[in-house]
Length: 558
Image 1 (tube, rainbow, N blue to C red):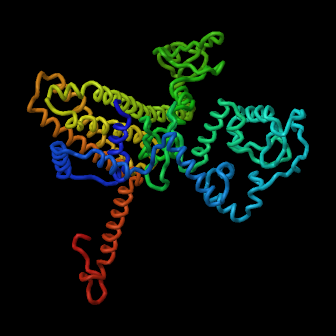
Image 2 (cartoon, helix red, strand yellow):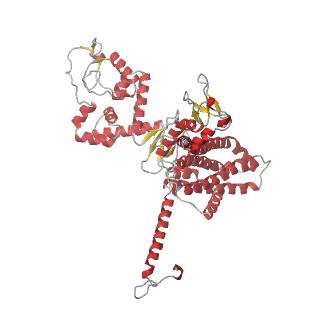
Image 3 (cartoon, rainbow, N blue to C red):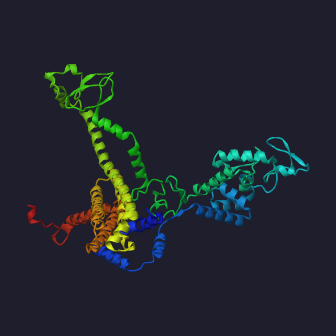
């Protein structure tokens, strides 16, 4: 796409606002008003920046670039440094130890400052006496050096600059553990801060340390996560407890903040995990083998029957010949047992119930496989359709929109309804794809008809929209000049976009509520039946009863 921000802004219109998928359905009058409102927007000059600002204020997450993360990190360190009257480096060491949780730092520090200093390694003074000689012995290489060539941290243990550099470089190359670096003296708890890294490490090691330092701020933060897209260096800051976990990064990758899988609203993370595991597991291969093959009676290898004849021959080196139906040796077969295409022994044994258990197992495996295949094919089909729609949108924005603007003599700003339709298709394909995973794991059969009705309505509306923007638009793209029908097409496409959005809002709302409407209807039905039953039982004590206590009988009772 031409601009990732354009994709984000348009996507926010449909998925960023948590209320979009919780607003319920709208009637035809509302859809008509949506079309009228859109036409009004086309004719008026709209302040896009105000709309974008309004939309961004409604989403429950923020995408952070590297400079944003560094700024937040510095602000947190500065805050702790100011409150606790510590240096910037000491505040950094303290926050690293407590995983960047400012409240935890404050609680622990004010509860027992001395204990925290000992634990973290922020010493108030040296633990070794101040040397009076002009030379000191390095604690690593044991060579003597002038005082100006000896370096130490707050503890005062003396080491030469060369040994410090080697020690720091080795630790940094070992990984993020370098962030908790301590004095080289094994018995010393003194922490080594970023000032020593800047002073003694090589340029390459400094860059590695800075990357580890920055990543720790995100990875230790419960409200932040890195975008899982390959090569993306953006982080997502999420407002917990605010509804949907679906987020969209600036790299155009949409994913679930909670489980880091692709965005899957309205299906919960547990269902997605089970579905992905099932798609990748060997269980379906075993189901296929069980449903479509039988084991060779001699070597037990599974064999698939690919011809009409019941005479089976196992592959070398086994080469065992047997009957497909009864699995007995073929030499015992002949015309008296049914010949090549039947087996009287099998039919007789089946009537006696000898093969019922094996057949049941095979039939169950076949039904299970067919059911899984039904849902998986539709899941995968919508995934492919979504990818193609994303490609079509990119091609539309980069190539076709400008050409259409020239042909129809319409500014591109008034053709936004076309990319918006594609964005709606992309979002709806994603939702529809995951509804098939939902349907596969839907165990309450009483809810299945309602689920399939909602799914069918949504899918039907989506197909109409997709066909309109994919097929009918070609007429105007290939036209030689502007046509009056284009305005009708714009109204139709805008209306279909709005209606399809409503269909999917209803579908998502119902699934997120666990199809509660079915439960409420069942409860209402039970209540009605209960009331009618109580009225029937109380009929003998009502107006129809006789004064002497005898019940009045309905003539039809006879």
